[in-house]
Length: 313
Figure (cartoon, rainbow, N blue to C red):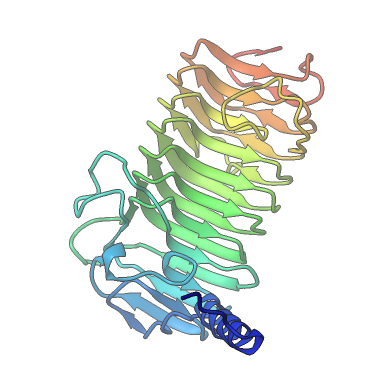
């Protein structure tokens, strides 16, 4: 026998379903305590927070799929050389990359004046906190964020500055990821003393962004992009190293000074068509099939000086 539902019954069922979906969409993770012992919490109040032990994705994640989300401004987070382990690595942060997802530490849009530090201070004897096995090891969409002393391994992107402004990254190792450091849109970020080696694609990907500074400016090498699968430094929007891409892309007014790029598979420094007005000087670039290449058809749309190798196009 066929069963016919009344219009009221259908409407009621629809309302219940909508309420359930809405409730899931607005689910909130627990607020992080001042001493953090497990993944899956959000920092929602200004103050000082300290990680007290290794953290694992299996302990739970925030609604944004993060281990620790930072929503509030005026926050100091000390990871104290512990590990933050995602689904794509093991407890030693040395597993082959697989099944990466989520974010280790995520500074959310609107948050500002944040310190995130992995300094050891006699905890376990290691100098850096390790973040490994995530889609993004650390991600910032905030402003005025200072990142210091992290080892970012086996992630999709080790450090992702995602529409971030005035972030500083200092003493970071971003090795063995797909891309070591990606700066996407945003502006006026400083990337210095970062080592990005043995990444599958790029050491540093400067993607559709402007007025960022990859240097310190006091005359010796500060960022290292070597032994990467495509390029040490890529200025442009292509994920595959297509320097002649015709896709709309504005990557301009960035500065690369006193960096080194060696033994990358294709390019030391590559600049995509449409990326103009960038300053590239005093970099040590050698031992690649092509040391410095500009996809604009000329090397005059960007400024190249004293790089140890000429620009070609």
